[in-house]
Each structure stands twice: as structure tokens, then as C-alpha cells.
Length: 217
Image (cartoon, rainbow, N blue to C red; front, top):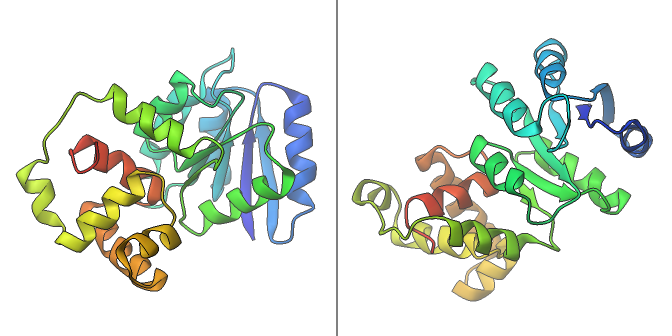
């Protein structure tokens, strides 16, 4: 059973998400709240698998809460899914750097929300398909130009570096496989080894790492 904590200052949004997720097989909403500090407290108390986190809340923003929640559970942190109204939100970039596993828009289809929660619980970070490339391009633009650090680049094989670079361009495993003329399962294996070497938990954090270290531009 995937345990979910809902964090949003709008009660109607929380109610809608609760209905959607409680109806989904294998998902249980174990708590909800309307501000960041309470989210931190409930995350420590309830130990959810996934936190659906709003970014703009008058009682304490989701960015600070994301940092605190992840810092408080370094060994077994929940996956944080940022749920936002804005597809290019300053808070989104900060949340990615804080360790959020991905984000979706509030007007996403119910089925997509369910799949996002399931994906994060299984360790697959994501960004809403409608904004993946724009968000990552903007994230890259805001970083200072960088050359690959020798230590970072040396961690990966040539093939792993290629795959991480294509991932940072917003490609799926299937698209990467088509680009490199290899099987999707091979892409998944290389990516898994790369993530283990650089210490990232999911695809989104791997992309963040790639831009920080100049592997992607």
C-alpha cells in the first residue's frame, strides 16, 4: 500500500486529490494539511511514501518543507511530488534542487496523478510531460555555464554519460534507446548504474546532477 500525505492550503484541492487517490487501488491517503511546518510534522509522524506538496502556501511554503522533510529522513526519505498551478515557477526549480522527485500541474488528469504517485513510490521521478522539456531547458539556462568536472565525469562510462545527457534533454528510455540504437532494457540498466555511481535517487535528480556538473548543457 502506497501511503500518501497531501499538502495544500486549499481544502477543495486536498478533497479532490483525496477522492482521486483513495479510489485508486493500492494507494491510501494517510494525512493532509495546509502549510509547510505542519507538513514537516506530519511527514515525521506518519512516514508516508509520497508527499504531494503545494509550493505556495501562506502558512509556510513547500520549498522549505521539502528541504526539511528530506533532511529529517536521510536513510528512508519519502518521495516529494510538487503539485503546482504554474509550469515555470521559481519554487519548482528550488524544489528540484531541494530534492523533490518531480512535479505535475494541478490540472493534470486524475489518471496521470495516480500514475505519478505510483511512479514516485517505485523510484521513478518525473516531470509532467507537457512541461518536461521547457522546465529542464529553463533550469539549464539559469545555471552558470559549466564544463564537466573531472571527478564527476570520471564516475561514468562513455555510454552512461551519453544516456544521462539524453535523459537531461527530456527523452524517455525508449527515445534514448532509439537514439543510441540499443534496447530499452539496456538503457534502464546503464541508467541504474549511473544513478548508483552519482548517488541520485531518481530520474529528475539525475537531470539536476547532469546540469550542475556540466554533463548536460
